[in-house]
Length: 196
Image (cartoon, rainbow, N blue to C red):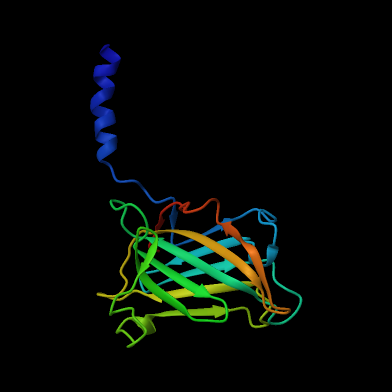
């Protein structure tokens, strides 16, 4: 009983100490190869670089031998910036053969806002972008968002990444059911990454 009395104040104090992020600045997370039947959008790794000026998230895939042999489907990068609020606050979404967009999120769903809207173009839209491997072999996509007051602000953050492969472009095929892959598991967060 004496031991319990001595440990209780210590345990209470530990609950008040904020969680320390597991990584500072840059972190890379691997995902098992072949954990999805169709490998075109099989996530192999995710690298997160969190700086004072921008957030960069690179999602790597196995790559394709043919140029532009892309699947149909999408890649979603969910971003959690508030440890006190459940779920993501932002997301970077890319539909193959369509547009990519950065948006505010609630309950894991994109929430259109005037600042991040595309029609008309909002004041924050130019802060987000997308690049990919130069050979167009689907080796990686890199999502970038600039940190700016009133648009996107974050110190420590964590991400969850998902892909959905709905078909193939050449020849055109639509699958009966999509092939889903996640970094870890659906809506599974990485450890917190402190701004570096």
